[in-house]
Image (cartoon, rainbow, N blue to C red; front, side):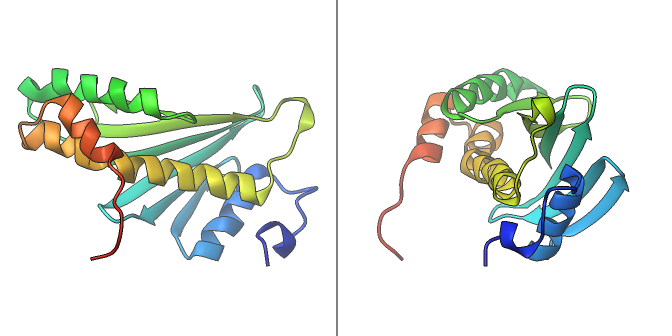
Length: 166
């Protein structure tokens, strides 16, 4: 059964849909407000903090996926170059680094103007893409911050496809 078949979305607020998805996946979540939800999604490398918020003003569902990243100050230029390289490969969403909070951030905004509604599959894909991008590029950020790799080499590791099974 698809996510959309589990409930009718006609009258559901986008954050209600996110809450149902979080329950479906058994993710820890907290309904921060009527228009905001925060959850923890376990990845291979770490647990990601994901917040989705609905803005009536600009009819946008905003996603922010964060994870702690505390690179040494002298590694920040390499981190920023790695972010730029990673963003060139991300078609939906982008990374940024919030230095004051020591957080790596992946952001995306789903614009639903004109009264459009997001369906559960769209929102599930949105969350999956955020976690997938964080998982894909986490090793590159770590290699630059702690492994003394140059950004180009680190990103090449992140985009390398693994074939077969160990």
